[in-house]
Image (cartoon, rainbow, N blue to C red):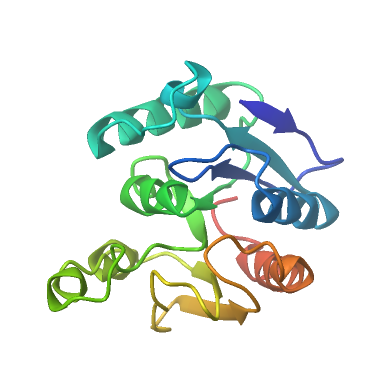
Length: 193
């Protein structure tokens, strides 16, 4: 875990990485900088499989268990008393969605949410992961590249979808990523405090 404290923090943003990447992904760094600029502390969380040097992710239940353990540790320590926003990119966004209630999140930030498994077949479409987003009753921001091969989640009640230039890597639309996060974070003020 890499913690960056904001001066007089009003909340904390926990960000997890994608399946094959790490916490230095450009969109995660852009989101972290945006949060810090808004007075929100940031914890970039590395999953145990990445800390161990492996590239292949653990099963979902193990990812979720590790995430909730880190969140509990932070809430009992360095981030005590702060409202928590759960978030991540790709696989990390899915973990944040699945565990938002467990970690007591006041909002969820999803960068490059992998709506559809790779491939455009009817079978892939049938395996949509929209249920993970639809299960959230918290304010949610999805920042998605306009040409993301994993699809574009639809907006819904409580869910804002910011379409930014780029694909699943979100490497080319970093200014738009930053702007979307900075615009959304103030909407969470007063939640959970």
